[in-house]
Image 1 (cartoon, rainbow, N blue to C red):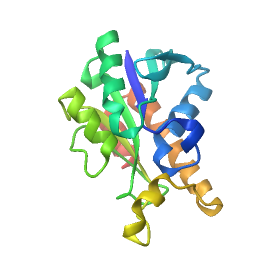
Image 2 (cartoon, rainbow, N blue to C red):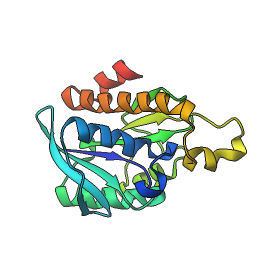
Image 3 (cartoon, rainbow, N blue to C red):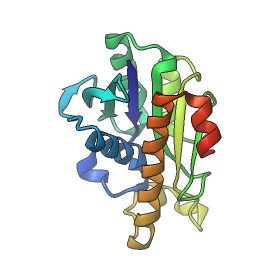
Amino acid sequence: MYLIVGLGNPEEDYSNTRHNMGFDTINKLAKQYNIEIIKNKFKGLYGTGIIENKKVILLKPQTYMNLSGESIKECMDFFKIEENNLILIYDDIDIEPGRIKIRKTGGPGTHNGMKSVIENLNTKNFARIRVGIGMPKNKNDLINHVIGFIPEEEKNILNESTTLAKNAIIDIIKTNVDSAMNKYN
């Protein structure tokens, strides 16, 4: 069984922000495979289903970004999911919009959601898909860039990015992380 987690902030307040690329990707995956994400447990919303003949749990932590790891840890412990069956999706300012990067391990960089996940799981060894949102022109405007609303002219490219991330998740489940890395990185 795979646990597929999209990082974001509760949607009613942050649905149109760059920080919700993880949630947006999960929503696309759920739609494609008819998985309802309506169960409220583990400090998050989740749903279960089948993707490419594998059981999956799709999780959107509702703790706000900086505490995402708490939700993921509770879910992994409850379902007894191993770290090699965790796939995490989140936004990354160091990758240009329209691109994604897949890794099997690594540190959190400057991403507070990833810091929480690594702290709570006590490991860096899990697959992650980073969705590029780019760096703001003015680096002092970083917070507004990440949690401010996405301008119309940027929506299409970020939509393409989350579609790429969704397809990468499917490839990881179908084949493996290495194959998906070769295809998408």
